[in-house]
Image (cartoon, rainbow, N blue to C red; front, side, top):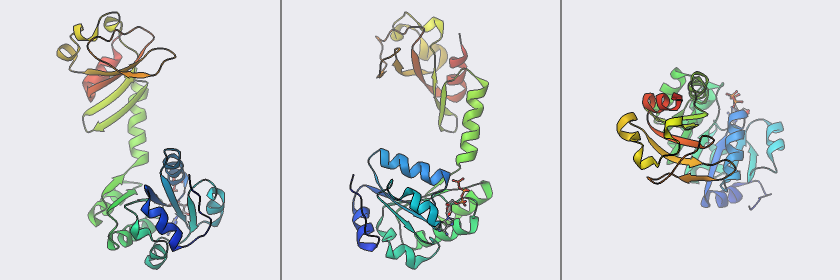
Length: 232
Ligand code: ATP
């Protein structure tokens, strides 16, 4: 992974040309997102007003710059307008979040993701025209609620009413090829993948035979997928 030591528009312009993302706001959420992008091989330009944060992340992101993101001039100097994707991870300072998004939209950034702390904040960002508004606290709360109430080991709602649930296979599903289990007809769900103890995940097919210690990914309407995960 290339690292850039010169702070300035030329360097950030080079980052913008690569598979890269600019992350504005390096609080807990922005930092975690930026580090995960780096781990996945994406170049990241991190921007924050806080000098200490910038110093702390200096060697961990492709480049980290201290700047006030509400100032169009500062963002232009950093060539943020040349990035295809920008994430605004400023939450509590709603005014700074809105101003930053407005500047980015005005500069014509093609894809903007922005974090909202509540519905009111999110609505304003959507009305501004932000392409993807995310609600990390709300979404995580919803997700954990599903984990707490059932047998799911992990849970992702793909969209309203449709989910992927990680669970142990119910006893009645073990020892029979999935194709003969009547799963889709009877329960309205699909087992998309499975993992044997100590092995990797594999796509499931009609010949897959599950054991009681396996893990499975159940895909289907949320109620059915969750209900199925709870069968023993
Ligand atoms: P988290 O929950 O992710 O820690 P938060 O919701 O508390 O974050 P904020 O405190 O609003 O979010 O901001 C996150 C980061 O954004 C902070 O590190 C802050 O310094 C930075 N930030 C806030 N305003 C600006 C701005 N105008 N320009 C650049 N960075 C900013």
